[in-house]
Length: 130
Image (cartoon, rainbow, N blue to C red; front, top):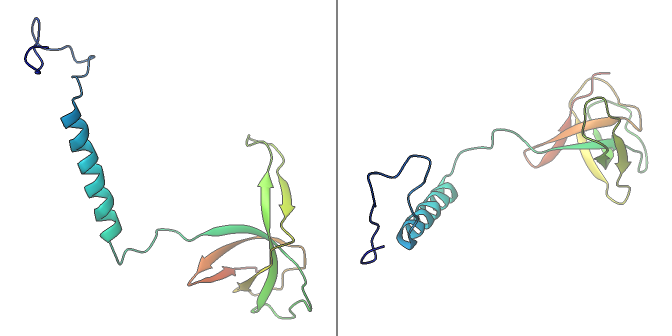
């Protein structure tokens, strides 16, 4: 280091050695990150590519529905187990939490049916066709 700057001793720095990072470089990178984050926050009108999803099991709170196109009471399920091919998952229902999901299918799921529900327009929805 001479006079606060970088001085090469003999020729250019080999490509496997990154150039030194100065405080000014770090400030520029922080500014770029802040600008990108602000641009992302300002973006509007772009719907998410996918909806939220949750594993649940249907349950009976008072009277189980008697037609397909109705709301069904469900308990969220926690999935645990070894994440490896062929491993058996463990399902644990959160019986302290009840949510209601609309069936847009053509059949009535039996009480105790495991489902994947999706958030659509502020409501939980699933399709069960038997």
